[in-house]
Length: 306
Image 1 (cartoon, one colour):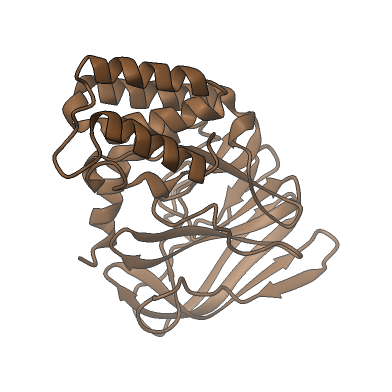
Image 2: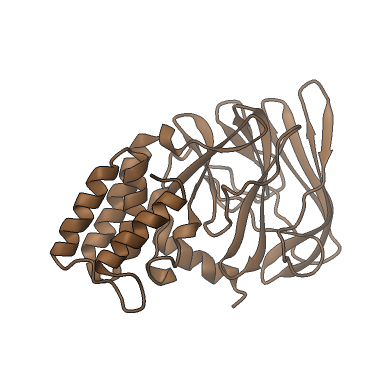
C-alpha cells in the first residue's frame, strides 16, 4: 500500500494521545499568500500553499523575530496528493542580513525526482510547508518531508548554520509535531521501534519522545518533561486496561515511559502481578505471559530505557 494518508490514520490511532500539547495560537486563514510573523511565540510558520500541478513556481516564507526563511523551487507532479518540489533551495537570512542557503534532500526511496513535502503538523489550520522555531541553538527552519510509503517516512528536517538536517531520533514511523511546551519550541514524536514489536501494528503504541535542537543536532529531552511522561504513561495504561487481550503493545509503551520516570523496579513487579492474574495472554503469534516479560525487558534494555 502506498497511501501514506491511510498510514497516518493508523499510526495516529495508536499515538495521538501522547502528542497533545500546548496550542500556541491559531494561524490566520490561508485564503491569500502571506506570512505569519510573531514575536510572541516559539515558532512561526508559512501560510502559502504548495502547488500540486507540475511547473509552478514555489516560494514560501516564514519570519520569526527578524529571521526569514524562504523555500524556493519548481513544483513537480504531486505524488498521491503530496506536493513535490524540484530543485528546492532554502535560504535563511538573519536580522543582520547574513544569508545561508541549503538544499533540502529527499527522504530515501522517494519515488521520482525532487522532494515530497508532507507539511508540518503545527497548531493552526492546514499543514505549513515551512516553519521557523526558536531552539537553544537559535532560529531553526523546519521542513516536513516524506517518501509517501506505507509505514515510513515522516520527518521534520532541521536547517540552520552548523545544524545536522536529520537524526535517528526521528525514525519516520511516527509523524513528528511542532509544539510549544512551557514556552519552548519542541519536536514531539515517539519511538517507532515499538510498533509491531509486541503485537500487530494497529494495536501497537510508541512511547513519548520530545526533541530540541542544541549543539548542532537534534537531542532527546523527554526526561525534562516529566508531567508529559506521566500523562503518556497513564494514557497507555488506560488503553491496556480497557482490553488486556489486545493491549500488550500499549503496556510496552507504558513500561518505557515508567522507566524514563525512574520506576523500573515497579514495572516488573506490576508485570509479574498481571501475569499471575492471567492478563498477559496477549494474541497468538506474539510474546505472551512470562515470555512477554522476558522479551520486553530485553527490548527496553537494548533501546536504552533501563
